[in-house]
Amino acid sequence: MWKRDDTPRPAAGPVNPAPAPATSQPSMVSGAFHQTPGEPRLMREDSASIGKSIVIKGEVSGSENLTIEGQVEGKIELRDHILTVGSTGHVQAHVAAKSIIVLGQVRGNLTASEKVDIREKGSVEGDIVAPRVAIADGAEFRGSVDMRRKEPAAGSEWPVDVRTEARTPASANGEPVSV
Image (cartoon, rainbow, N blue to C red; front, side, top):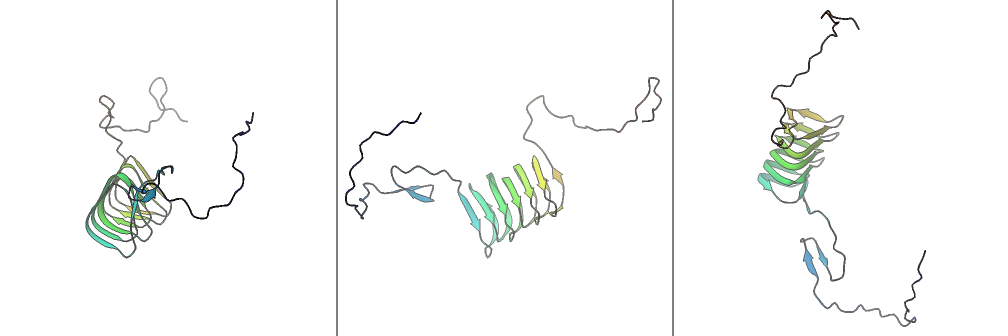
C-alpha cells in the first residue's frame, strides 16, 4: 500500500545561510505579485477598492471586481465583474455589473446579469433588473424589480399575458361545490 522512498539522501552537512542567486528575474503576473520560475501560479481575481474618503463624480468602468466604501456619483459599468457597495459606501449612479452586493446606500437603477443582493443594512432607491434578486430582512428598498432572465431561445418565450385565477371547484353540472 505505501511505497517507501528509496532515493538516497545527502548526509547532513553545513547549512548554507545565503540563498543561491536567482538565475532569472521574477516576472510580473497580473500586476499583482512577483513569480519566480518553478513557483506555482496563484489564481486570484483582480480587485479594486474605493476608500472611505474618496469621492468620484463621473463614469467608472473596469474589468475587475470593485468595492466602494466612499462616494460615487454618475455611472458605474463592470459588465463581467462584481460590484460591492460597502457599509460606508454611498452611490448615486446607474449601475451595470455581473453581480451587485449592497451593504451601504445606493440611489439609482441597478442592472445585473446574474444577481442583485441587498444585505441587512443596505439601502436601494431605484429600479432593479436582474434574473435573481435577494433582499435581506432589515434592508431598505424603494423601486421596482424586473427579474428578466437571459434572452430566451427561439420558440421558448413566455406568453405575453400569463395570469393565475382563483377558481371555485365546480360539480359536473357547473354548480360551485363547497370545500
